[in-house]
Length: 527
Image (cartoon, rainbow, N blue to C red):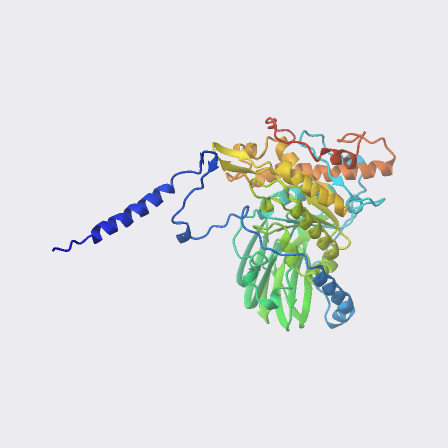
């Protein structure tokens, strides 16, 4: 009897199965008998993973307050002895900075214009003079004020903060881009500063597995750390994309050098100075006074850790953008509280802004009480890291997801904002519902149509950032105006209702529904 060869048919069957499954990849998710089918992607495991930072699984940091208190006790016990070993700030005065006295501000100087996009800051601090009021008082008194604006990829590249910084510096003084990290593990587009690095190894709190154990407690709240040895260089160049970014008069570099090292600082490719650092396991500052167009740092010998540099000038406000891609805010717990305290002692933060939330959201979920508890822990951690700073929680923006029939709202503002507001109330800090600003323009869909946001219907761009920054600056100006009016004894002329303060208004608005699409409004005072 003849044995037939069926192997060819077997291969045809395998090929048919592969083609059939591959064809399923082109069928979108749909509903059948009330059940939602998911898209099939047979090649997904073979493709390079492209992480969408807005929906990535977050690093699961936890608030270890026992470790925090232990570190703080060590910091306080060793503070005096550390200062005797090596100075925390090494200074080079190449050209002494002239700080002319700023004229006294009057209420009319800071009064914001009324706008259909105005949204007030809600201050839940019950002290007679709240921390946020004290921050504003320093602003209007012409003192040096520093802001750490912490966030996720929503503010990456200096989005929002670039325009906020310009708005506030134009009124309250100050110059420069502020803090910029040294080296980070990926490239970002940023117009407010140009940065180039060579010879560094960059680490991120979002990738703990890549961080050597000896560096894990050396992260500042900025979330990035770079290590380098002889030959490593970093350069920061000032830009003029905003009027107050140039004409800077000082530069500051944050360095940790456990062993003896030598670092060369080069200003504008003309002025050079060498800093000799003795070994010390804490953060030090290389401080330079000179007109700064560019700052270059080169490691001549030794091994150092660099957090970044700040370029600034004048007397007034400095706004530091500290965005971490894919972050839900939990990386705050991965920062070393001792490092945070050391930097705070050098730079003195007056306000810490927390812009998180979208990365913690899941389509279909409506209860975020666990995130609310985490946010309370974040606020508590920041309070211990920066004990003299006010805290401002920024509510989530509008976010859409793609489903049957196209893009639809995730109702992120309606769902997440009440949990963020309640955490702010519980911890007695300030809150600003950013989502209401975005909705006042018609939501993120309107931002996309106008070219103010990316097609993912999540991330705004620089044009969108300007639309958000202006109302936030105006909300700060409104508080400054109220404080000055109180000093001057005038009748208050507020942009917001007199009958009720934000503290009275907003607890009543927790259950507000934002399902109605706000109509597109003509552009106004956007120049």
